[in-house]
Image (cartoon, rainbow, N blue to C red; front, top):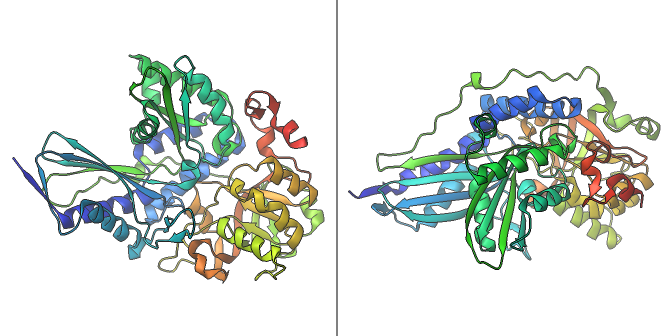
Length: 508
């Protein structure tokens, strides 16, 4: 029997699903994070997980994005052979119309992050289209759709290796994960695709991330096949690296390992690996011709009761901060920032450096100030700014020395670790790098009391904002002496490809 899928039902279902995943974590993710919180012994990592869980509940209650990076949309569409679409446009166009409506929804505007002409002009499409869409033809008379919003920080850490047939997959994973740093925002998942061709291995890895987190169940019942044995081995050995939540050390780097495989050529063994971050966002729905799909929302009672103690944090007045005060900060100190900060990420930094190279004056005076690496979501209602969590700091590493030396900037705020060149520049300029928790964007935004665009408005979410913050929570990640909390947290992670400790590498 043929099923007819109406255009409006498809568009609205995609739109609704994207709104849904912007503020609801999958229930299995919440439960796994809650167990990780209960197990964690490292206080810095436990505090980071607490912020992620508190943020998640806040987003579920307020229907605002979990992360300021609301992702590039991935859509997996399994079309039954007995399905007919009643469309006035192409199937791609209908799905993208759902994306457009989902991201421009007035009650919960999502950040547009997709750029056209990626190699040259890099112009924002303003509505987060187009999505990356994958189709399969399958038996049946229904359409199964999975939508995911994949953040840039985790997607940028994707890896592909064309291994020799005799090479160890486990060894490759354990060699590769430490090189990814913490910019993929752990704890999360690793999706691994084995076999096929290069593009098939990556596709398998991405598809595997749509599966339910069930590692605790697997550990309880034991493996029943070789793939499950491999999942457990990689899970235990990756967590033993000690990278931990946000790279701060601790017991949980990954909540699960997912693996899908496919036959491959005798001459090779393609392996793809894609991480999913602490803003894991995906949902599945089915269209059967009866109307718009509905996805069951989690109950607030499903969220754990988590507390986060800031009583030992130091309050900092950024408008009157001195070098002497910064000199007293130690890696791992928790601070509550008050006063003025400016924002700036990739595009703003490139433009600032171009201006400096031409001898032009910057549009903002950064002397004695802090830059926050963020591209916020637009505000709705009475919000000052939408969710505004940090972006991966290492992308700004190549600009760090020049900006510090040319402006007198005191420091930077971002996500995860810094590379050796940036750490050295921070040390040489007696600056500092502070870390905010990735995956806690809505929580962070509540500390922002005023926000205005002060430069580069044409860059959209990458414009320079001036924020006034009150008790914005951060940790000292790199102090004025170039000592990094990320270089001192996990002992095994300090090995640079198994040979040189990170601390030594920085010193060299």
